[in-house]
Length: 84
Image: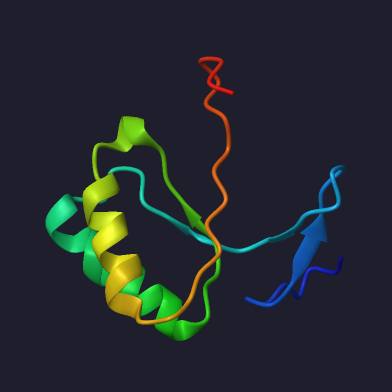
């Protein structure tokens, strides 16, 4: 990977899954702004939304995903707390 990462640049993880290197982080994003931010990010080409239940804005993230109008494959990562 070069320093010229774009929204389509990915990295292959040890399990073979390709993951975008750039994404939208929603930590501390107020729920009233999050849905719009997610929808716009997806419209601009983002395919990684970094979120966690601890952020307390998962409903707004879901609303933004739904409002984007595109088919998405959603991958969930097990929480550090041991959820499998």
